[in-house]
Length: 126
Length: 321
View 1: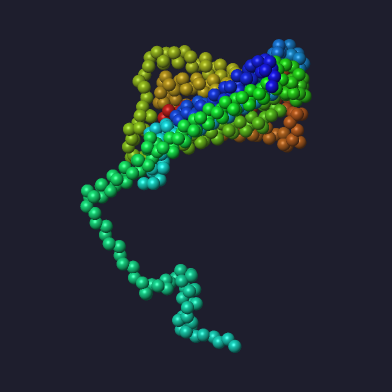
View 2 (view 1 turned 60 degrees about the vertical axis):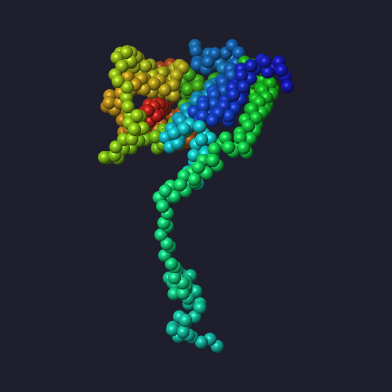
């Protein structure tokens, strides 16, 4: 493990820590909305990681200016496209999860997942 | 030597009865057993009420977490395990990061011949000044088509889950009227949105149309237009937006945009399934009508995204247009 490289890669390190924060949120929160927020934090960390991976020191955004078309002038365009895909998918997934949460709330009048599961079990028994 | 039984004799046999029973036509015990009708359950109403109460209490006690020691123990263990697992995950990922190439370095495995091709030949092959747009809407246009369909499918699912169809003559429950309830006219909000909404929507259209000339594109421009529509809806209420954006408008717009996208990209199947060599003239790079199909595809994507954003908002707020 190269500690100096870890400090040089601090953006990627931050992205990984954000991923961990989002994941622990997803696991440990009981409120469904907070779980969805954790999921969104994880998405954001993935965008950060992809954007950082495509960056090259001193190069510009990949929009052709003054007819310069050399690899030395622009950053890598592929991660930017991947971030775009990720944003669209994450918007769709969060909308879907929030819609399901609304339905659950309307049925059980609570957002706590434990309470919802106990209510569900009670309903099955009685 | 076999002997043929007469029909009456055969009917007395066990095999005939068995067959009949098997075919479900006759119950062999029908004549022998007679079920007594069950006696009417007679319980005093108070006693019955007490029984029901007892059952409910028992259920409550079983499912009350504070009384359930194994569940409490499991919760504690679960939290400890979660923290430990997340720390483990972060440490493993950080170790992986420490082996990655340094930040901002040029000689990375990601910067390979694919991105070199996009940068060096992108302008000639797609006609788009913005290399990212050229990439996602020309080289990888099917990927973007899939993305638009992901959005469309998400909208359909949200519609299924949240749409509020009221049957005729059915009275709203309190919860439903609460969702339909709109705030009173807010003069400040209305004045501000009168000033802001046209520029927002114009800017969205600009971002969509300039997707191949600079920063922008269908997704971001569509999101801007959706935001403008949501602001308008918040200021003026559903009565005004219904005039120009109803469910039918959304259906027509998104289906025609997706269909237009499919048709526009499927031309390459008829011209030899070669995406790189376009038969459509690319025009001069930098002009608004250039870069082949990218402008059309950007407009289609923008329409789908704007409709999707607006539909999400409307569904979450009211459950109908």
